[in-house]
Amino acid sequence: MLKSGLVLLSSFYLVFCSSHSFAESVLAEQETYSELEEASYNLCGNSERTRLLAQLIVEDSDQLRESLQCNEQLASIAQSKAEEMASQGKVSHYGIEGGPDRRLMASGYRLYLPDDAIEGNHVEAVQGGYSSAYDVLDNFKNSYQHRVHLFGEHAFFLQQDEIGVGYASNWDTPHVDYWVVYIASQKHPDADKNVKPASSEKQSDNK
Image 1 (cartoon, rainbow, N blue to C red):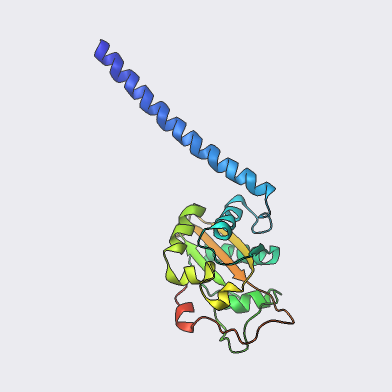
Image 2 (cartoon, rainbow, N blue to C red; image 1 turned 180 degrees about the vertical axis):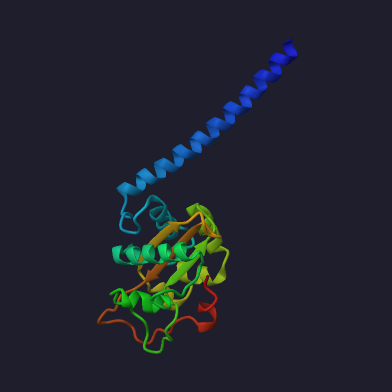
């Protein structure tokens, strides 16, 4: 009888600890989101998920940019692109507006590109299949092409100073979750026209 009681008590303790641990995780995530509302990330995206991913990218210890500000227009374009990918069920840089560079310009964003830049993708990172912003960041960090862009590991990308993030989901598609991150800079009168973009070989591999 005593043995049965100890087994029952042990089972209860395990269930309690698991529930407590889960509750702590949820609470921690809620606290993070609450802090986001007070911070300057609310223009980075239209949801807690997107604002969290923006915060993780901006504040990551590997981030080389001295300044990376939220841009509401980039966030809106990113959201539209994420919804487009979710509706089509595919993760791709190319869509209704063409490639990422053209999409930004067609949407009215005054994208800065050097004179010798070949139109394609110098601004976008996309991903599918993960619902957590932490998992998305880990995957980006483990991809050389994404790291170079997102953390400014090239002279051209280092000067990009604005970010916007989009997220959409569709359970009837292969990836379910779809993410879009834009990091870019707008044209300035004194923009350095001699800065060259990363090679087209590296850019074409961004997924």
